[in-house]
Image 1: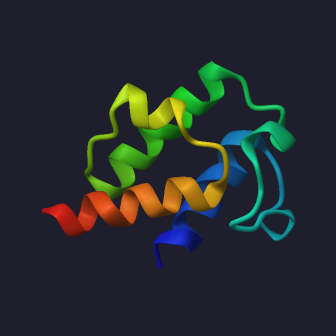
Image 2: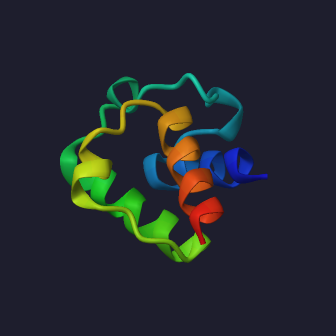
Length: 77
């Protein structure tokens, strides 16, 4: 499932337990800086073999936002 993979990637990127994360977790709550989000986006792009634009990445606020973006990109192919 896309959400589960994204939660695993977020947990790894921000060194937090997956159990502490949900789709409602905001990146701001993880003290994510722009570079952290960029690194996460690269990891997600590699994992799902998709492209995420800088504009899309800058609009991300929650894990659900990222999951929705990935699912939309995967369904567009």
